[in-house]
Image (tube, rainbow, N blue to C red; front, side, top):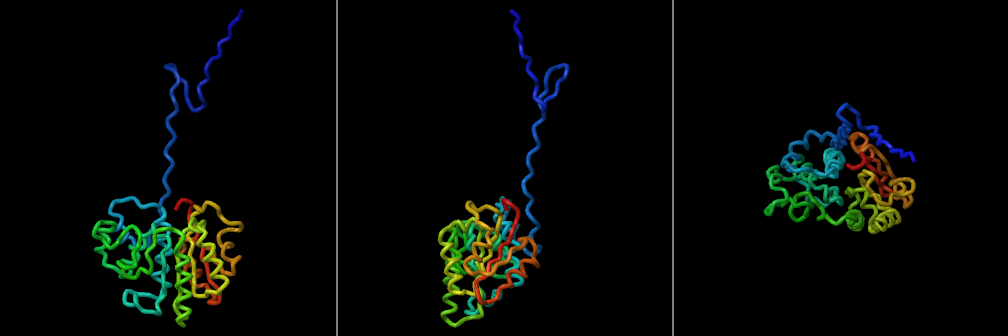
Length: 260
């Protein structure tokens, strides 16, 4: 009887030498996404907030939108934070607050020295914004899915008071739209023609459910106007954020790279 012994074949990734089979070197690590450049006026305040910590990409994904809003769109200054005819900005994506604080400091709403103790036991600047502690902050946010409903209520309240000049802007993440409260807010704002309301959705493709036809379709099916732009292009963001017609609510979908 003849016995046949199968010889082991080294994997293609290995190489053979007179001394035996040498394992292939490990694959190089996958590079981490590089954060987009921060607008220069925000860079120094953001570094003071960061203080050597690592920020999640959720912070960097919102900074360009925040800067364009505060630098070129919103009718509010440190001197008009209590003016009843000011524009209102609501940060629904509260866990991205570090960039928000940096922008507020860059525009003079809060002292830069406050940034050094952000998140500390005696700091006014918590890990979510607090309207009672931070000048210029309109709502305390944290639990996702509430900001747009609060924005609808704010716009309704202004209209009931006969204040037709102020606009209300709400910044959300795309995954927040999985929350049922946002479906109700979108439908109600469209049905009541809240022309002073603008939602800004930072779309980093993190939503669990998505929406047929894309995020903008979730709003337009309920009577909103919509614009979809590169979330890093400041001029495109400015055109979209000011592209409302004042007769119906408006949404700007600011698209950034996946994972940001």
